Length: 136
Image (spheres, rainbow, N blue to C red):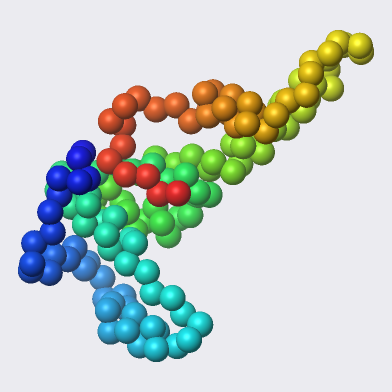
């Protein structure tokens, strides 16, 4: 999908709301409070995906049933990958490999950049065009 090709019309385009949950009026009231920040990021994300018939998204955060329900109810196909948990498991496995190395075997100093590169090469691999959007 070419994100830059999607133009916004002058008329307000909004996703139809399927529930009676708090809407813009509540957001405006909350914005008056000094400790509340209102973000339009999700609205923009949904707008960018509104042309897709069955949008596919990848959620890289920890699995949240409310997030899954929200997107599934809107007709999205959601795949999840808990990136932080995967990273922790990867680091644990790498530490174990270093411990098992023979005494005197010089495995050298491993940089954080090389660990990150190895993690991305082995863990987060999806075919091109697998997803229309990513939640991070």
